[in-house]
Length: 94
Image (cartoon, rainbow, N blue to C red):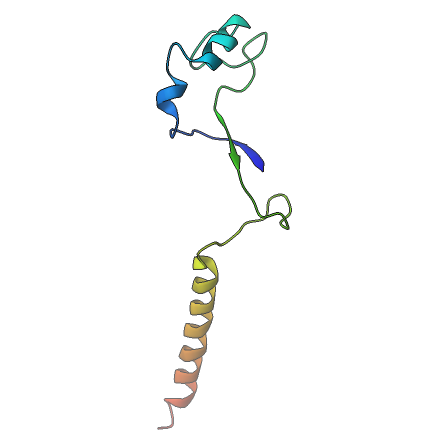
């Protein structure tokens, strides 16, 4: 799992609930509320953290192309380039 800081709105309903357990615990430890960072001087992160699953064999920063779009676009550009060069080469004489 990789942890990323992002503006994640998927859980905003329970994250903003005034009586949630997590909110109460943070407030007991000095958290001031929405928009305030964590830490003594509110200098810490103020965004939600989200865990993102990555493939076990991939290194940090590696990207996956689950649907093949990136690979398909690169292959398509290469194919179009070959077709254009063939057309240019063989259309002049005939």
